[in-house]
Image 1 (cartoon, helix red, strand yellow):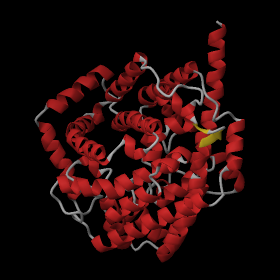
Image 2: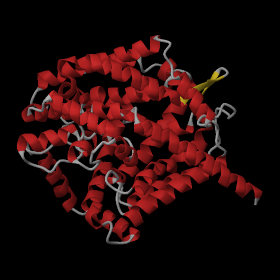
Image 3: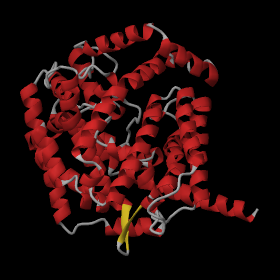
Image 4: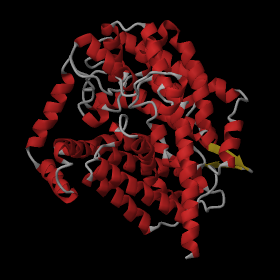
Length: 479
């Protein structure tokens, strides 16, 4: 595991990569932290072996070493080549994706995201994660929630505006807004929104600090990194307890008011039954017939330490004896299902977008097929397991090709203006998304799918919101 962290740090986690290829840097940082750094620290603090409850420890470590080597090799091939997304950047520049929004525009974007978030919670009554089999309107509105983070960027103008000062004076309204977002996540009983709001602010601060200090080592020496890691594991306890409290009351969140839900969540947090509830969750995770992420003894970090997930993906796919031909068919259907339904019908494809083999992850399907337990779902899957299932022993070669083009796609969110690099607001409000890009997904299949509809949809919605907010802000100024 040390090999994985060292090779990523030496070749990718460098100042030049952060400045010129920030999205690639963040994706790689997430890979190093979640697969190779946190597992070491987490199991050490929990007094557990690195192979805790593994079914195939040897296979996991061998394939993780192959995976990180292939990933870094793909980056070096892209970095050394002259193959850059010039056409993509020209198109995005034409539609003003790199254009600096006004302060008023960012505030309008933020409040638009808040309105959509409240609409989804109050009117539609579903979370973002459940927006797969609903109406086209809900699917369109869901990505707009991401714009709630736009006003936070006002504290980091140097990241998206070449004319901004390097150090911005603090704006109390921004901090009030951030507190409001966290409070809103409590009232809505949305754990993911709460965690992403906090981590996005931290990532923006770290990104800005590194660019100001000009070197990563100067901004974050080893002692500071180690201190931050230990602090993260210390505060993980209360955060995990609060997340469990929110889980305890989620079944009634649509039946009571927001204020009552907040009070009920606090009562659950202070209740002695919460420790019993956490033990039940951990016991369920240890059930061999279910998907288990019990690794560090902390349900929050178990979601981030993906070594156990790599083992479980290999375990269930081998038990299910899932054939490569069926895998390729499923991936083909998933790719085709990215097209809008009217286009699918016009082209003659008869694919049900809510069918299990289209919406469920590899790990979920494999678990049901191999054990007969469970009802499918969206259990996360590791890249090594899905890669072997999809491409067999040739998966390293295919991974190099896939990641080369993935780097090409996500590298389009930054453009050089004179001697400076400008980072699009679209990238900055999705900085948490890129940091966790290789987590909470369907392995290599999610990476493939992103290069099609999700990337295009992300850019299209941003352009639409940018022009809409510019129009509204212009009308406000006139009045």
